[in-house]
Structure formats: structure tokens, C-alpha cells
Image: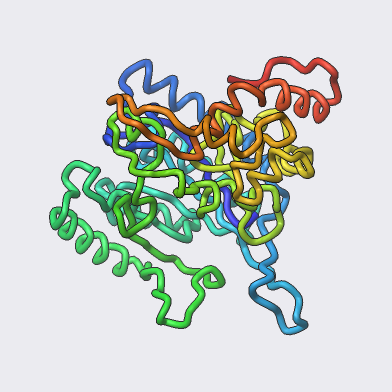
Length: 354
């Protein structure tokens, strides 16, 4: 696949008001042990059930024979915060080691961090484990201490550390370089602001609870990067799925109301192949969520009506993700259960992992 977004644990040292999932937060004592333990219990099976190869074909780029160029896909590891002490050595490093053992050099290992825990020692440990990119994701006004110019000092300090360790910035579009074909390592700064990444914010998690989403019916997260578009097309450019710590798989990072499968019990490619041709998942794959219900009595008008709601503050709100949530809640439970039972070779499979 081109990329797999794998959240290895919910544990974080922050409780950001814009976070897309309320489970990302600080945990202490037994709760921290449990949340790290969930990832520890699952990661070996998850890595084992990832695709046998992360090499994908990109038809926008041709090789010398005129065929789609073969490229190395990315495994993006994230939290929470993967660099907190409770997660780093007990879980994050073992996940990196398992991915290296499975794929060798035929995977781009990328990680996300808020950046404030990065040290030269940790950078060295990451490079020893073949991390290809360090993406610093906390560069926005929603992260306490990173508002406006406050983040500039950290960015300068991180830049010095990265470049001293031989890590370069992701080249800009005017450079003429294509970093996806380069061995790196690279660093990259980004955040949730109007001009970068997801400016409108998602109708999810604390962003939703705090009334921060500015998305409208014209905001189609499904058709954006890390949305559902092309998720079925493993082996080809654009394909990506999201994975939770327990192995649950989703077609997008914002997540449907129910997972499409679980990697503790099935291979990812088996899950995806079983959904090809199904009108619901083909609509998501095309980045057209408004069409997902047409085979189940939900025409586009009904889907649009279901996409309207009120925010927790009582204000009118409408976005396609809301319609997707309601459709999955009302329709997709039996559909997904039936698909899972067929894959597992049983007419009445055991309950799916929570």
C-alpha cells in the first residue's frame, strides 16, 4: 500500500482541545498500564497481518519501459505520543523492530510526534531503527505552548537537532525532487491550521465536543488525503487505511462508526479484497460518501438529510461525515458482520473485537 496509518496507543501527554478522538489523553497508574498493554498484546499479530509487501505502483510516474513506477510504501506510526517514557521502549521500539524484521528496507517508517519530547539521544535511537521520517505534528495554535510565534523557538531547536543528526527537511515543490523516492531521513513540521493540513477540523472527538469544526457539506474529508478515497486499491498509489491499537481497521483516519475488520484475526488484504465490488465501499473508495447508501434505500437526498445535525452547543451543522456515521449506525452492522463471517469461513462468526 502507499501508506498505513497505525495508531499504536491512545496514551498521550496532552489533552488537546481539537483532538479527533477523546481517547488520546494522559493515563496514569493502572489505566496507563492497560492502555499500553492493549498495544503490546496486539502489535505482533497486526504487523504479521499487514500486506506481505509495501511496494506499490504509481501510474502517474512511469519507469523506463513505460510501466507504472514501483515505489516503497509508508508505515506511519502515531499515538497519542509515541515518545513518552511509558510507550517508547515497551511498545514503540518493538513495533519498529517488528516492521523492520518483516519488510527490511522495503518500507518507509514514518512517525508522528508533537515534537516537545524529542532529544538528540532519541533521534539517534530512531535512526538506529531505520525511521525514514520524523513528522512533527504539533505546530498549531491548538497545542498549548505552540500558539503563534511561541512554536518558532522549538522549531528552530528541532531543526538544529535534526540536521546535526543528518536528517534533512522534506524538499519543497520548487526543488524538483520527489522525496518519496529518496531514502531520507527527513523531518517535516505540520499542524491543524487554516492553511495547512485540515483547516476546518473534523466532526470528531474533542474538536466536536468543543464546537471547533468549521466543515460544511462542501467539505468532503472522504476525498482528501487520509480519507477513504482509494483505500481498497492496495498495491496502487493513493491506498491507505487507519489501524487502531487493538487492530481494528478503518477506511479513513476520521473513522467510520464501525471497523471494517480486525488485524488480530485477519490479513489486511483479505479484508479489503472481500469488500471490493460492494456498493457501499466502492462509493467510499471513490471519495463519494453521499452515494454509499444507494443500494440500501438511502439515495443522495436522504444521505444529505442525515448529514444535518446540531453541535453540542446547539448550533446547526452539516457535513458528509455525519451522514456516514448515521448510515453505518443504522445499516452497516449486519453487512459488516456478514462479510466478516464469510471471510472467516463461518455463517455465524464469533463477535468481532470491540
